[in-house]
Length: 69
Image (cartoon, rainbow, N blue to C red):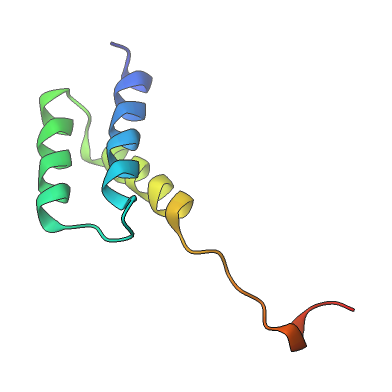
């Protein structure tokens, strides 16, 4: 498996972990362990995590008085 595929796999695991809106410590630990087992370094693991966080961030709500007319 190519490095890009391994990093993508870790990204998918982060997506699953953030699916309920909360990252549990056990999920974080499990993904760290899996990343180590498939030789994904900390830098790539954190990059994949940050991307997943951005994908699962709550959209910014605009109040009616701030919307463009």
